[in-house]
Amino acid sequence: EVQLVESGGGLVQPGGSLRLSCAASGFTFSSYSMNWVRQAPGKGLEWISHIFISSSAIYYAHTVKGRFTISRDNARNSLYLQMNSLRDEDTAVYYCARTYPFKVPSGAYYAMDVWGQGTTVTVSS
Amino acid sequence: DIQMTQSPSSLSASVGDRITITCRAGQSISTYLNWYQHQPGKAPKLLIYGASNLQTGVPSRFSGSGSGTDFTLIIRSLQPEDFATYYCRESYSTRGTFGGGTKVEIK
Image (tube, rainbow over all chains, first blue to last red; front, side):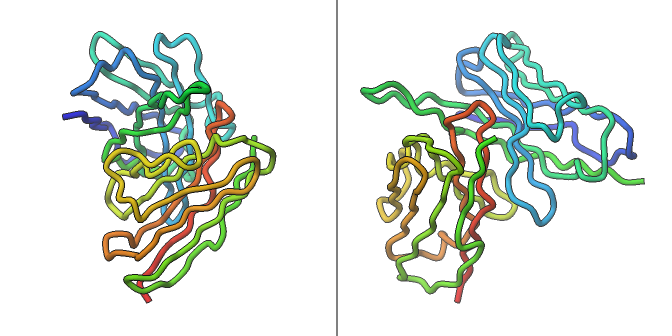
């Protein structure tokens, strides 16, 4: 079964740090780009970071750039998100998600087709 | 970043209704548009990729259309399990932006 399982969430004070993990199983992790997406309480989904297969390219949303670092360990089938300088507004459920290339005659469409159940991060004093 | 605007932000409907959700991009994104369903406490679910391609396993009552800047998600004959929040997301840019979401509630 294709599966993503996040862990590492919890309560942290403003200015603190936290490291999230995402364990992949049931597919060849090293063959897919991966993402982190979050949902703050009462808000919509927000994409926050993307990492290519071999970590050759990494992208961040402006809201987290310079504070969060995405990484992956293909040997351990794991994705990570190091979160530093946390703010109240980082409180959210954090999801990891796989990017899948759907091939069509003209090329490919990329979409997040497998998601974890999420891990909750609460930033509060 | 590309702005994605969904409407309506919420709607009330009954089982069996046909509903339409629209998504407008701030610039042309061709057909690089995906739709997701999200229910409370669950993982988001991919419904449609490339504006109109149904993801494997998604019921055929869901359909998507559009290109350029204007896109539509239609659910024919709404079922109890369809009450959820729906999001569009552009995949044209590397920082693909989500729309604000459309919450579909039971009337």
